[in-house]
Length: 220
Image (tube, rainbow, N blue to C red; front, top):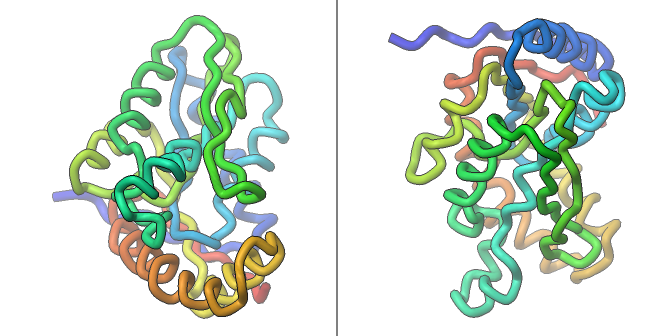
């Protein structure tokens, strides 16, 4: 029987401090380790992961799952542009392969990122130096058990799930889409309701597979 995750209620500052402690424990290991930060869209995973890597320095590297979105041209060919962001619109197997290779890499490795400015993948968006002993991986679907996502969880040495209330996530996502200015407000609202919040609900069901759950204390 799987152990229940340890649940903490923390402010963003305290959450970062906790993640630094988690990172320190992994850095004490002799081998390269993976700290996975999971959670639904709009929960602040990317910000926390980047802040953590900045705080640690060259011993850590940031590895975003979002670089494994399917390219827009492929989504158009599949007729799946409207579903963008859902699990089936990612190159999940490629992400699992990449993470597995990265854990054992002894040379610098570059990886893809995702730009909200152009709504597409950007090659060589980040680099993992050979000296990095901790990979800080973040993404929505790190803890899913559907194929081929199930391959990711065993590659994560310590997993933290970031939980933010659904209504606050809705407001954040609407604000995020509006700030990019790529689509109409009507389209943004429809996408948030039909895709983003559905993904949030799906990801929330993977929360029990985390080692630690951080319920964020925040109003914005």
